Length: 153
Image 1 (spheres, helix red, strand yellow):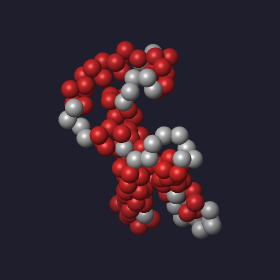
Image 2 (cartoon, helix red, strand yellow):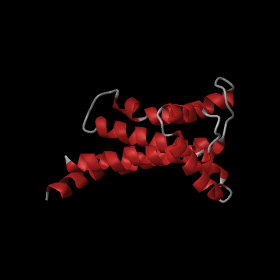
Image 3 (cartoon, one colour):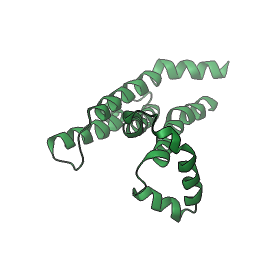
Image 4 (cartoon, one colour):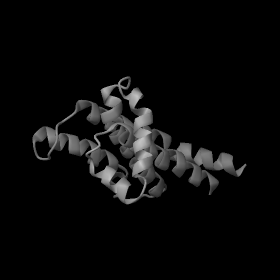
């Protein structure tokens, strides 16, 4: 059980927090999430965080600010689905596990085709694919089983 909690913390919650922090620190203040922060009463805290981290923004590569957050949620969703569907032989297992990749890469390809609003970004697409692959590598049955066995000993 401890292993499962650690897995969720490091492979689901932490990537979501990292992606969320990148958004909170360096993305456009006009995004709806900043209104949500105000409604939740944490607007002043987020504002202080943005002021404190503002000097770093000029040193960060564009792809870090704009592509890494997408990759983080693709990683987290892929890892979570791999955990949920671990050990299943269902025909739908690969579909569920690939949901993060399908949504992340699919939205980029939809933008490229003009079906979805927004502008296509090859870095977004590439990092989403890499994130899904990394999540699958870290969540493969043998890796997770080994960490479960290690925790039991």
